[in-house]
Length: 234
Image 1: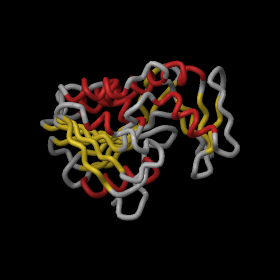
Image 2 (image 1 turned 60 degrees about the vertical axis):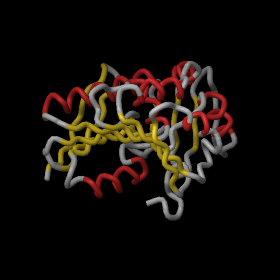
Image 3 (image 1 turned 45 degrees about the vertical axis):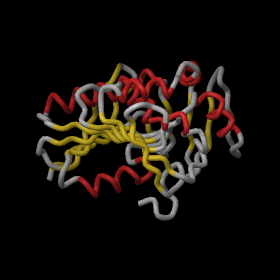
Image 4 (image 1 turned 120 degrees about the vertical axis):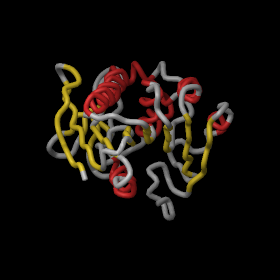
């Protein structure tokens, strides 16, 4: 069983932590986590990894800067997309794969679709945002206690686990131009694309009908909330 953790420089301002667990048998599974969380996706990705690490080389990494107290600093979409691209290139330079797979949660699905990696056997999007996240994102988090949204400067968002997520202006500037369904439609042309919709999704709620209309995509409904922490979601 392989287990490695190392640092990978993405640019002069950001170095991500890459964690590899599993077997070198030609099958790799990349994980693309959601907004403001760490590479374990609050335990969800670790649960999946534990279930499949005897069949895949599992690759998890950070999109964000993680502070010592657990708070995170979120990068713009372009930096996150570049991070995913660089991680894929780094792993491919070290191992040979016959089958490449990717699991992405929430915003991680948008990042995966921005990259649109080629020659992947399959991509699974967990609770991907169907609509432009700009207004819904701001409205959703603005209601939170001890949260300050400033799209022209620095935002501090209190998370459900008690940590804080810090977001800069560039993140919101790039978010305005995101068109998720267009990105997912493009991705479905180049890979086998699956979507898992949590039926009690409190973030995306009832906007999935646009995803159901994408040609060649498979949508599966699963018990659980947006983070798949609801009863029966495992």
